[in-house]
Each structure stands twice: as C-alpha cells, then as structure tokens.
Amino acid sequence: MILWASSLPSSKNKSIDIRYTAKEPWNRLSPDYQQGQIPIPGLAGMYADCITGMMEGLKLIGPTGKPGKINPGYFQGPGRERPVEAKEWILGYSFAGQRVSLGEARQQIMIPAYHWVLWNRCHDLVANLREMGKQQDVCVYDGVGSGYLHDPDPFSMACALVSFLNRSPEVTKPLVLQ
Image (tube, rainbow, N blue to C red; front, side, top):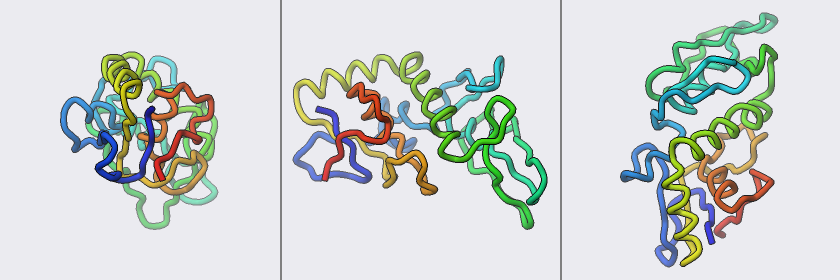
C-alpha cells in the first residue's frame, strides 16, 4: 500500500522523499523538477518547465482593485517564488483568462499538470512505486503538511502523488500515515 506522510515517517516503513533535493530518481516527482514542455492548463499552446514555475507565473499580482498580472517569465527555468512588492497583493490565479482562487488553481491547473507529468515524464517511477506498494507499505513524503487543496498553506504534492498512485478519485483524501 502507498501511504502519505507530511514529513519523514518512522523507519518501520519504506520511505520515499520526493523533494527536489531528494535522491535520484525520486526527485523527478517534485513539482520543482524541470521536466520541460509541460502543457499549461487553460493556456493553449503554452508550456512550463516545472509545476512550481507554472503556478508562480500564473499568479495574479498587483494593487487591490486592479486585475493583476501573470508573469510568463516564471514558466521557464527552475521553480522559484515570485516576489510580491510593497502595496501589491496576490489577487488569485489566471485560468483560461479568468481569475480563480488558490484552491481552484490547484484543482484546475496544478493537479492536472502534475498528472500529465506523472503519465508523460515519470511513468517509469509511477509503475515502480505501484509495484513496490504491492509488496510492502511505502510511505511517500515531501515535508509539506497540508493535503487539502483549498488550504492557504502549501499543498503537499506527495499527497497528490499518493492519491494518483492509489487511483483515489479524491485528491485530498489519500491514505495518511498517522
């Protein structure tokens, strides 16, 4: 069985870290890993190098009362946090020309893009993890504590990965290691 933990679990289970700084090949499952040419949901013909860069680039930042701007420069290169200047706010995210909330952006952009990466760039790792999960309990973690898409805290991609691996229809309800 594949389980999710927010941080390094006990040594009784096989554990796989999927952070960008994790060991090869598991770091390829990180949203910061530069997969290259990931289609951006809601922006036909546009691509990003990594999931984090995609989300940061689609952030609408600007003064209150203005529509905010995306920054396609974040679509290329490594994932990095987009700064918010004084008197600016994160006003939402751009999806198909519309402003959406963080939770909606995760649901409509980040998760579908991550699933695309899992199918098209990391199929070998997905198959390997599923096979490992048939043999023993495997815990996947990334050091991020929230598994809820609409939580304002950072979202655990390890949680999304475990849902995908277990073919769970609900991305926010994977099997959690207590």
